[in-house]
Image (cartoon, rainbow, N blue to C red; front, side, top):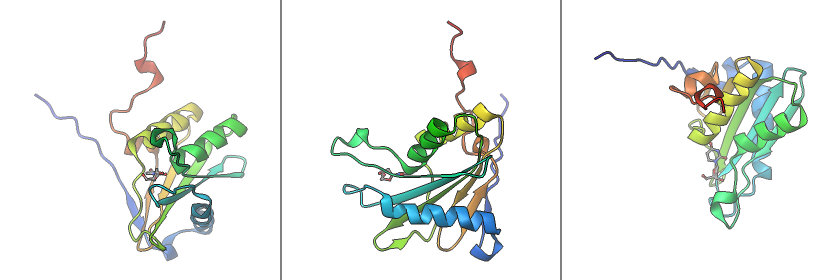
Length: 161
Ligand code: THU
């Protein structure tokens, strides 16, 4: 037997330790929580993506009475980015969560489905995507979606025909 060990590094930064571009992207994600349509969970999630050309694309979670028809903020944001700017790599993605009258103290953790979409977006452009998870107490920064999806599933895993 041998063990396969995955190494995930999560940088924890205070607000003051973030640089201006990171703070700007997070502020966009925070503002987007106001556009969340979440009458069922009451959990507002905002996301913002900075593209290689400098454009910032934004998204928020969109729920539906038919629950599985809804979509997370990360995916509305990344799909909007990929749909409108298909030739632009996503350099960074920021996420903020708001519930019960305040932003969460701890950073929100993206669901597994969103991590899979982050992974494919990153590999599609061949550039690492920085992921910023905002929390009132600390912000987590992960240097690449690869780090969030050990044993990732890729197009190469599908049959050729
Ligand atoms: N949600 C997101 O938008 N992103 C995540 O990564 C986790 C969950 C949303 C989906 C749903 O609208 C609400 O939060 C509760 O799960």
